[in-house]
Image (cartoon, rainbow, N blue to C red; front, side, top):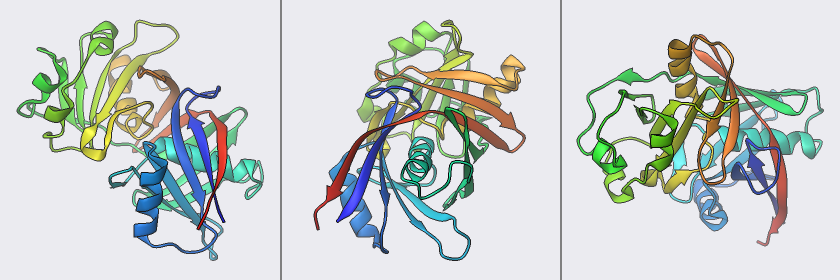
Length: 265
C-alpha cells in the first residue's frame, strides 16, 4: 500500500494554512496515476516525490486536481516536513528537490522551514482586458506579470479583503493565476495578498508559496526592507516570511501533519 500524508503548510496549527498531499513513492509511477491520485485527494496540490539513487535528492512534481504546475511552495514545504518527520532525512540534513523549476533546497531553522526558490519579480504591463472587471475593482496601483501570474496591487488591505472575483471571467485571463496584493494595515505584517487560480482548478488558494517569489522582490523595492512578514488573507489564512536574495527568494513557513492514510491498490 502507498502512504499519503496530508500537511497544513504556512501555519503552526491544524486546519489553517494550505493543505497539501505528500506521496513519497515507493516505486516509479506514471503521470496518469499521479493525476488520478491528485484528483482523488482534491487538494490545491498533491506532491509526488521519489529519491534519486545518484545524489540522495528527490525528484518532485506537483499536481492540482486539474493540471501539473511548474512551481508550488506550500507542497514543497509539506514535502520537506514529511521527509524529516518520517526520518527519511536527518533533522540537520537539507531536503533537495529536482523540479521543473530547477533545484529547490529546504532546511530546518528551529520551528520554521527555509526554502530557497527562484525570484519571479513582476514587470509592469497594461491591464489585460477584463482583469480588473473580473476582480470587481475599478482602480489598481500596479498591474504586472510575473513568470506565472497576473499581478495587481490594490489601494489598501480593506479593498483586498473585500474582493469577490468573478471566477468565470478570471478563467479567461491568460495566466496560471492572479496575485492580488496591498500594503498591510494589520500588524505585524508588511504586506497582504490573495491568490486566485480558477484556470488551474483552484478558485482561491489558501496560501501560495510560489506567489511570494513575485511578492517578495516587488515589496522589497517599495518598502525598502530585506526581511518581511506576509499574510495571505484567505479564509484559512497563512503566514510567510520572505527574504529576497537577488535572483532567489528565501521563504520561511511552518507545517503541521493532520492526516496519514494508505492508498489501497
